Structures are given as structure tokens and as C-alpha cells.
Image (tube, rainbow, N blue to C red; front, top):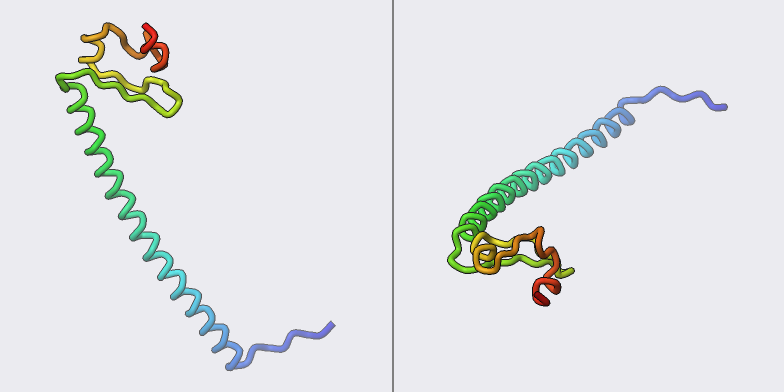
Length: 101
């Protein structure tokens, strides 16, 4: 087995340059991740505001409102819907069932 030769100045410079290149790439990726995190946090704040806005509007709407998912499950009925029809989510969990009543 061959003994390892000691690093000379040229080898150390190449290693150092390679490390600097890796550090620069990592710093660039880190900056991109920080920007993405910032964007996601901003989007979360906006989404939270939109949810609150929707909740206030739907809870106070002068008309019955139903949210139904793709499988026809009722996900939300507003108070006016309950007032008009007398059913809440526990009474009619599926849209098809409600329309049959």
C-alpha cells in the first residue's frame, strides 16, 4: 500500500479554492431558502387574513351558505343556512342526502 504524500502548497490552494467555491454555493442556496421562507411566511399571514375575512362574511351573510367538498360532503354551513333550513352539519353531512329531504 502506498503511503500518502504530504500536501504541497498547490494541493492546499486547490483544496482551499474548492472549499471557497462550496461555501459560496451554500451561501447562495441559503439566501434563496431565506427568501422562500420569507415568502411563505408572508403568504401564511395573507391566508390567515383571508380566512378571517371569509369567516366574518360567511357568518354574517344574509343568505344560506354551504361549502361542499369534491365528494359531496358538507364542510360548512353558515348560521343563516341553519336558520332557513333547520339543518346543521351533524344533521346532513352529505349534499345528496340533504337534497333528498
